[in-house]
Amino acid sequence: MTADQRRDVASVVEDLVSVLALGGVRLPSLEVDWEHGRLTGCYLVQLGSARTLELLRIVDLLRKGLRYERLTYDD
Image 1 (cartoon, rainbow, N blue to C red):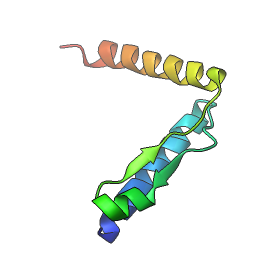
Image 2: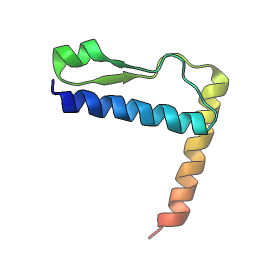
Image 3: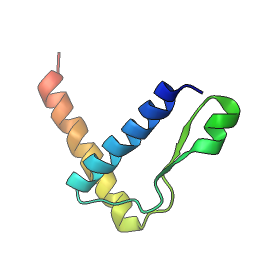
């Protein structure tokens, strides 16, 4: 694996954590499966365990984001 690939996946996870935090959500076991990436060349991000309230908040944020996208970019 290249350093660029490791940096990319770490950056994506950092961005996801930041965006979720802005929405008031924290996934306590969010992590990169570094071992899988080392063995296969494909890094997986494990979202881990989450309480129902956290998942409901994520679903709500996604729905709002999709609605906004449809209103903004509707062709």
